[in-house]
Every structure is written in C-alpha cells, then in structure tokens.
Image (cartoon, rainbow, N blue to C red):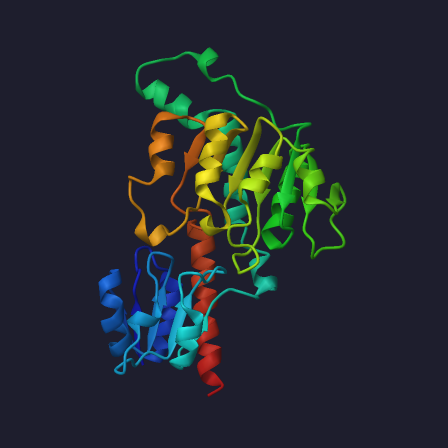
Length: 313
C-alpha cells in the first residue's frame, strides 16, 4: 500500500513503525491544492485538522480507500462524499474507552480559564515591555465560583472533575444525560444554568442540532460579567454575537481555541482584530489536543486501528 502522512510534523515514530508493515510510507507536507492529486496516488491518506477533504477533491481517478484522522470532530471531511466514493474514514469518534486517557483538551480548557481570569498573557507582555507592576493585573479566583458546563460527554466530565478539584461549584446542562458525578449538579434547564454561573465552558459535538446553537438568544440570557470558554468547534457559535457581547460588557471575557472556517483563517478575522486591542479575548489556534503525549498515543492507536481493519479483509 502507498500511505501518505499529509501533515507529518512531529508525527509519532512509533506509529510510523507500525504503519511500515503495510507498505510504502510518504511523509510530505501537503497543502490544500494537492489533496485532489494525493487522492489519486495513495491508498491511505492521513490528515490532521489543517486539511479538508471535500466532494470537489474526489475524481474518477481517485485511488484512495482510507482517510485517517486522529480526531473526534470530523467537520473537516465531507463524510457523505467520501462514503459515496467508497473511501472509509477511520477516526477516534466513538472510541470512548481509549479517549478516557486523552485529557489534553480538558487541561487546555482549564488553562484558558485561568489565563483569562488572571490576565496571564497581558501580564507576560507587560514584563517583556519593561514593566513590573502587579497592580495592573489584579484577577479573579475560581475557588467558590460557579461554572456552567454545557455538554457532559467525555471532555465535559473531565473538566467537571478538574473544576471540582479547584473547589468550584459545578453546574451541568446536557439534555441527554440523567446522572452526573458527585460534587456536580445537573440542571434540567439551560436558562437556569445561565442565570446562575460566573463562567461557561462548552463541550458539545458539532452537528445539525448544535451548529450555531450559541446565538443571540443564548448570549442575551447570560448574566452580566460572565466569562465564556470554547474548546469544541467554532461553528457552534455565532461569532458576531459573541463579539457584540464582549463589546457591550455582557461577556466580561472569552477564550476560544476554535473559530469558524479555520481552513480560511486570516489575521483580518474580526475576532483577531478585536483581540489585538482588548485583553479580554484570548485566542489559541486549535491546540486543545495538541500535546506530545496525546498526539503520540492517538497516532499509535489509529495506526493499530488501520492494521486491524486491513487484517479483516
């Protein structure tokens, strides 16, 4: 088999060793314009989140039979088009037992919350500019504060555990959940949660039901001075409304690891332009799951998944 690792930077050596049993491996940084050609040259293409595979990339000469992505979110792939073309997608989606050991995104969620509340990026920047004035950066503690976690799946549960350890009051809203861990409180109404919390973090999948869910109605219901964290997917949020909430002060601050249409990112993005002049919006480039430990474990897991899949043929 011919296998293309299309985003090879820091790819797991252990995963490459396992894949080598299948045939020829090519590690080549691939840009979006090269995907169509790659589909016609390789049996397996491994992508991360920097590339998309859409219906327009598929042609009569397409040879590829497997797309591998070590992610749970799959909005960078046109699943219907790939299925029609006979291309199977192998991902982390649904592998709950394995994913319990992957904590990177949950840790980043807490990191963003603390960085936002303690003005860490601004304080660091100030020191580099020759200042040493602690009074400029008086922040807020999380202990005894109330956090609302929307979505109580794998990541929501881990974040809730961390928040409990930080002595926070934890409120959960998830209409598909009937039980939460000790120390957490499950609410039946989103309105009730929004009226009770100091901080909000969202951990819901992107689908037809949730796309654009966090809209004008949502942000109009939050309490004045709330902080908002998103490490899920950008398309869950109406970004124009979020910016408006920041400008009006209804949101005291926000930290986003994801934005809409990341494949078309530009420094002209209104979120970026706002963050250039305001310290109450933190942006990171979808690094929630980007740790040496988590990416290596996930890449080895996916390589072994492909081996098992081919062994059944």
